[in-house]
Image (cartoon, rainbow, N blue to C red; front, side):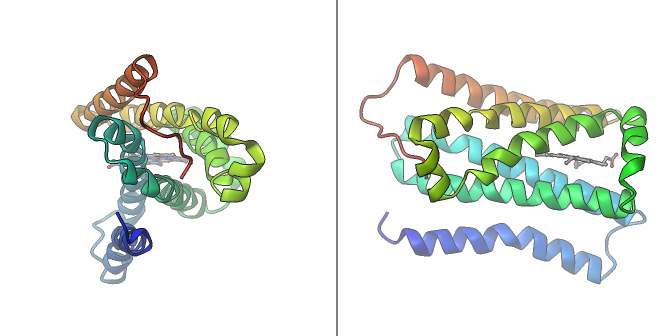
Length: 202
Ligand code: HEM
């Protein structure tokens, strides 16, 4: 993989396409009878999908030997955080109208909100420590240990999704299955460590 910068640019632009489509749908008023629900669900789904794709990088890399995949993991993780942030802001701005004091009562009424917030709070330190400077400051091993939180974030995100779905739980259960497979592969790799795969934080 020679031209990493170009590939990163392609990935960056493509990762913004869903946002562009969402904004276009909003502009054309093609967001159904409940625009708040449409935007919340779209951004939530995007956050979860990017989170799962970023989690798939390491197992894919160790099973296929495609080491260059690691170069895109950080960007994928940051897009997960970006869409989760948009998701949170949609809730705060258009569901709560910035009346933050109404959130505790809403959490009591809809406990899945608290689970989603936990997922977001778990993603926050990962986003903050994603820069090269922070990786250096923490040191590779501590950084890697901290970033194991990402699995907890994934579990809370899927749990949040499962709780909010009212009847058809097939999709959240599928996400839970994929997450379990990815976590299982990670644990297997820990026990049968491939000696030729170098550690990198990219
Ligand atoms: C930051 C705190 C969060 C809040 C306040 C929040 C709130 C919500 C709300 C109100 C809904 C819509 C429920 C409905 O329409 O009945 C929703 C849906 C969803 N959220 Fe969150 N959420 C949060 C964090 C997250 C995170 C971190 C993720 C994933 C990484 C996530 C993934 C989802 C998914 C997948 C859906 C359902 C999408 C669909 O129905 O297609 N949420 N969330």
